[in-house]
Length: 441
Image 1 (cartoon, rainbow, N blue to C red):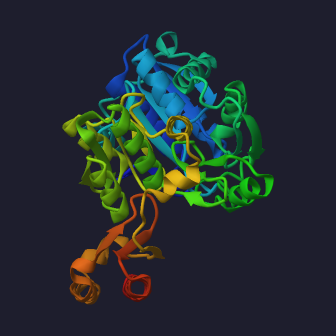
Image 2 (image 1 turned 180 degrees about the horizontal axis):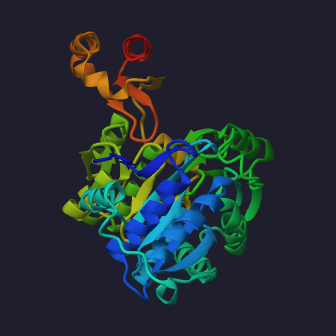
Image 3 (image 1 turned 30 degrees about the vertical axis):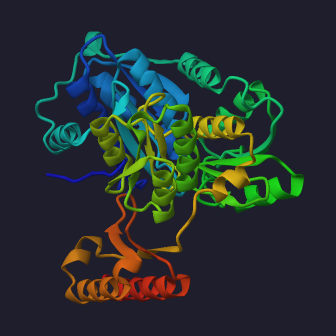
């Protein structure tokens, strides 16, 4: 059986890993498993050139088995998830999120939440053996229609949450030449902010290119030079946020979560006083939340693990250092625009600038190195690499920690070293990264 699904759907290079045939097959599988004649599957996409091609293939597959398609066009992933929940319909998002333009991906959503492992396994089986799926004759084929009403409903949802928090603010936004380009500028202006917009001219090939949440340097320079109050940087499908304070300093997902967690602890809306984070979060976040009377629950990397733990712990706030933050009382998935709104609400409630609030979330020195490797699946079985990790862990002792894991979306080994001494952890991380590249290529 195939293993096409990773930590966030199917993702890879268009034409070799993500193909027309794969999209066609997935469309048929989703319609067969989650649809029925007369029902609909929603489709959305980000701004990659390949998005129209893959959406067309999905549409052909879905309609071939008698299920309709509602095409939302270019939307953010959170918008598609919101629309799926409102309609009670399955959905497929065509996006590779923060990956470069040559990549694309297919994310399956079931009634307002991303498909779980069991559901993805069923789809894998249908992709490997599509014989249970029956094509329909002409009179029973599904139909396809566009619908932009879902975007307006999503914007109304965000507007209600924001209230008057943005009135009078001067903000910069980096839309990553992605889906946020179609939503964020007008939305934030309608909320009463003066908005400086960067990277909102998608051409199909420039998504995430030197911009967005993975490259927020230009936004930081703009915020500082123009004297703006803050900046918000999204990724290609706008499910992540990295912020910039008024001094041009980056505020990552850990700090955003910390600021929002402390605000919710103060007003009593952090349910069970719990914040859910992944093992990649900084230990300083744990110290800040515990000092305020809260607690952290740690999970493996991936928003699916975060959301499952949030449900298990009945928590309403969780996320990742990368800026993928979930407000479970507002949404079922990470939403960069919603996160920006919640962050500004916390700033307004505190009556202090973002720079001061971010300083209240201490950051232990942490180094993360992504090593590109060709034999990703062999990393745990390599004795030399394993021995080196054990030696480094023993050397750090209780002064820090080491986390080595494969990326779920790229051919990379992620090596994270955290501790009190910056020089020491930098040396250890580079030694392990160099060894991983030597042993796994």
